[in-house]
Length: 266
Ligand SMILES: Nc1ncnc2c1ncn2[C@@H]1O[C@H](COP(=O)(O)OP(=O)(O)OP(=O)(O)O)[C@@H](O)[C@H]1O
Image 1: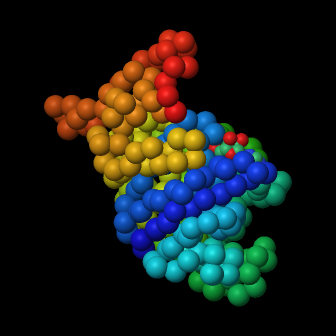
Image 2 (image 1 turned 30 degrees about the horizontal axis):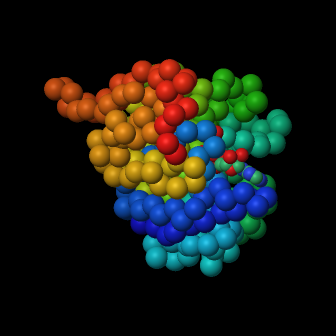
Image 3 (image 1 turned 120 degrees about the horizontal axis):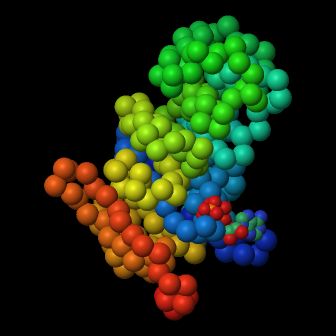
């Protein structure tokens, strides 16, 4: 299902945080949202997963404005894996993944286990993310990387049409980072993902959107979006993105001297 973010503007405490941001994610594509700290990435995700209403503009999923849907209708379509996941203490891994079925249960937002065929998507999500063996463990006792996989399983159990991921590879080792994005690609679900690791972003995403000070500084195929000018002007590093003879697109960069970075025009 296609996601269209159309000229979205958000002001928080009188501070413009997003200033007319437009993003398109074609059905089944993975778009990476990259940009320096404070550029507005998480705020944009919040507007997409219907947690923060934009002051201007629209977010359309399959042509329907997500803000014209009920919270439950939105939750039936969009699953988010976020940084500040507040999982109640004492829950087992299986119980956490079952939470993903909540929008599909007849009593929305109840923690009562559903009897509406939710078992199959839960087991399938755990199988795909390699978390079945953790099913009985307390979520709070897992490593950071294990938790990340369980939270992805919870999102998959939701059977979403759109996946919204905020730094999903935090805590993961370098191999697990690529495996997680590969898993997301295999799912074929339309995905918008905030990624700080530019190398991972250029290798794993169909296209990138570069945010800078609340605006889209560049967008398109990783080779077109991350030009040396963007790496320098937005990220303050000297570098380049290039397709190597082995077919892999890689980003290489070195930190600029602080004095030089300060001179970059915004
Ligand atoms: N409630 C608020 N009031 C004022 N400013 C806010 C508020 N919430 C966020 N901001 C500011 O909005 C800007 C964008 O924040 P956001 O979290 O979207 O950035 P980000 O690109 O996700 O950053 P990071 O990479 O550090 O996670 C930041 O400067 C932040 O301080």
